[in-house]
Image (cartoon, rainbow, N blue to C red; front, side):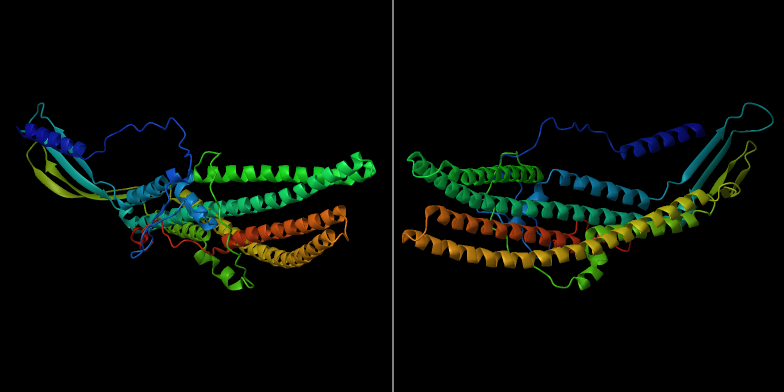
Length: 457
């Protein structure tokens, strides 16, 4: 009778435990590409990051500023689409570490088969692992630190994608301006070649005069072809970055003037608390510190505490505590401690190397920025002077005091000076963006993980 009641109770318990289990649902992989034909098919809504702020939608009907192009890349970059999965995996690790192991329950029932005894025997026990309780706080804190680390690392990835898209937008705008300037230069040379050929055909000019013009014309055509190829590659890279087909095009506005800094010392000092990749490394190192402490606490032998009771075949009842523990003779968790300490040392070295690289690269970029700025001022002055000479040459030509060949030389020189200015402006924009990445300046005020999830790591 008793055995029947125990069987029914066990069956009910098994059914209840199965009712709370997760079930399997198949999730097939995608079978086609997901590239969009234009901006209208992309996600253009910038979510609010504050309690009072409202979501903003980027207007794709107007020329887009490089900063908006960067935000569109963050919202639609195919590689960043895996961010929720990485965060979910980190949250799952935190959940696993936040759960204590289940108590162990034992039931032993022996049927009486013969002898002087009077009834069957029954033994019941329940025990809980104590070592998991001792290391619980350290495990949870380490898991929270790693969740915050994943969040900071993903924020750094978002920033890099945004800056790469901004840089490509700046390059595309510069490519188009360079292409327009080189087109004017080629038109001047083509017109001059046509006039020289007409005069030569009339027998009024020696054919050797055409040779330097043809060489300049070939060089201009080659430069235009190279610029067109660069523009095509930049567009294809930008389309891939924001999830568009390679032939998609849209208008890009002129970039804002580069914001230059004279002294980066204060910003370099605060890098560890501001740049997400350094923050992620610090959080990883914090988690490794907790792992070392956990490994040391883990020297405490496996220890289970519980209670057991029941009756024997003479119907004698008994109950009392039970203790099960390992004898720390061969394994005193020394291997785990050594691994944790080695990982901590490795992370510390990686953090130091990243910090050194950030400071060194920032100072190198600052020096490059300052030199580019000086070169740009010189190029602008030279371009202004060349434009003035070209205007004077044009007036002299209309007055009959200057030949057409000389006028073309003045005009092409002015265009070359303009190209120098465009090149330095482009380099200055690129250097300023690279410096902003190294200094962690201009990061969006966003947090992938809620502060409540990583409170008291």
